[in-house]
Amino acid sequence: MTYWLLKNFLLGPLILTLFRPWVVGREHVPAKGPVIFASNHISFIDSVILPAVLDRRISFLAKSDYFTGRGLKGWATKTFFNAIGQLPIDRSGGKASEASLHTGLQVLARGEQLGIYPEGTRSPDGKLYRGRTGIARMILEGRVTVVPVAMIGTREVQQIGQKFPKFKRVGVVFGKPLDFSRFEGFETDRFILRSVTDEVMHELAGVSRQEYVDVYATSVKERASSAREQVMKDRRTPTA
Picture (cartoon, rainbow, N blue to C red):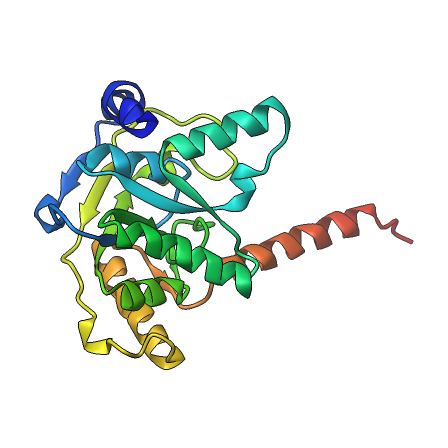
């Protein structure tokens, strides 16, 4: 109920008014049945722009940190993310990853739409990075169609660390649906999972027209963080 209230009467109309999203490829969006939207992730507002242009409800898998904050701010954040269809997942791996997979499959089993950011995190610089194979497992185990979708211009609206967005027009481009039924029965084959994931990322790169980099975005962020820490350490070290 809260989701539809926000989408149709509160947040949805506001998003459409402030950002005036243009849409290409709407004919590629299935009218019914389970579907995974594999999206690039270049801004925080990606998760509110996409639901605003879709007719049916969509749920996103979001990092659990958004749901564990304390105090009034933590409560408000958790309430907001629940209201817009975000589902908490633990990215620590192992059993936590299996639980996250199960959460996504439950959404698909209900015949609903699921949004996934295959890169696993926001792009640090606007480029498209290597996909995580979790999306391939959901595609194969859920036996669902996947639609690549590109968010255009959202990074210029709200970059990482920017508290408030700029009110500029953004775009959403839906690519042709991808069918991986030929790999049915290979849900645990890591080579097949990597192949499926790479094909999704290849199609996503074509739709988004981003430069593709075949490394994980998290690795790029970790190196950048280490470099900043080293610079700070060097500044604190007295010179002879």
